[in-house]
Amino acid sequence: MRLFARTSLICALAGLFSLPAQAADMTIKVTVPKLDTAEYHRPYVAIWLQSPDRKTVRDIAVWYQTESKGEEGSQWLKDLRQWWRVSGRNQGEPADGVSGATKAVGVHTVDVPADHQALAALPAGDYELLVEAAREKGGRELVRLPLAWPPTAEKTLTEKGEAELGDIQATVRP
Image (cartoon, rainbow, N blue to C red):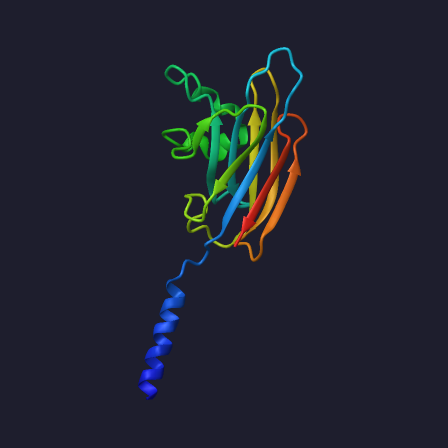
């Protein structure tokens, strides 16, 4: 009888340890504001996670002019200065797997499921969610949201840009 109880306990514990440690996900909303300028260009935007020491960097999305001849669109990714320094310049292809076209004025949602390369196997700890925008004949802006990972409860973080970015909202769910 004891052998059966031990075997059952071992099987139960093995099942517990085989579950994913962090099956959390995130939804990010980025507002591209309407600007009153003579010549308007859609901004390039990078969204990424990084640890305070910048040792862990995970790209979530990079929006840039994807439909252009040759490298015309990607050559301006350097204007996303913070992202370029920590991630962009180290990539053969700009943000492989997370690239997309620039976005028009409005609110844009990025769903980041638990199995996304940015969250999969992300060690527990303190991070920052960064959203950076740069616009031709415009300015640059970087918005930071502090983020503890993994979340223990659903939480919504918000920050507001001043010029190139509007409201930034991130909702994390365990």
